[in-house]
Length: 146
Image (tube, rainbow, N blue to C red; front, side, top):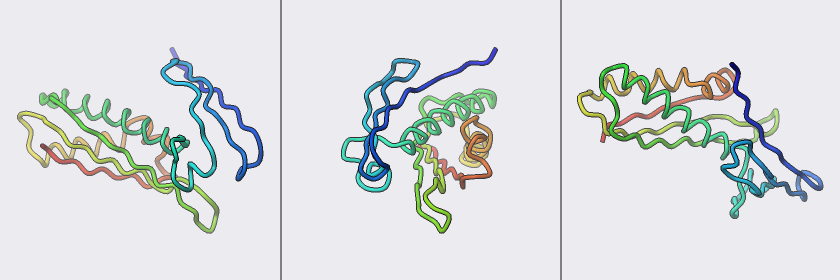
C-alpha cells in the first residue's frame, strides 16, 4: 500500500520581492512557515527554505536507514546524532542543489570504526531520500564513533 504525504504552499509576488508560506503539512507537525527567495540565497532571518526541508528529510531518512543496518549487524545504536547539510549554489546553468553532506556521530557498543563507516556508507547510498537525490546531487557521509 502506497503512503502519500502532502504540503500546501502559498506564494505571492515575484521571485525576488515575493514571499510564501508553507501553510500546511499532512501530518500537522508544523504550519505557517515563511519562505522567501532571500531565505534560500542569503541569511534565513527566521524563514525556512526548500533546502532546509530537504536537509531535515535526508537526515531523518539516513538515521532510520543507518539504525536498521546497525541492528541487522547485531550492534544496535544507543544513539545517533545526524546532520545533513544541503548546498544550494549558482552555476552556469542556474541555481540548484549541488550536494548533501551527512555527518553522523554514534554511540554503538560492539562495533569498530571500519564497520560503522561501511554501514553508514550503505545507508547513505540506499536510504529513500538519497535514492531520490542520487545522480543529481553529490552525496557524502562522514561517520565517527563517539
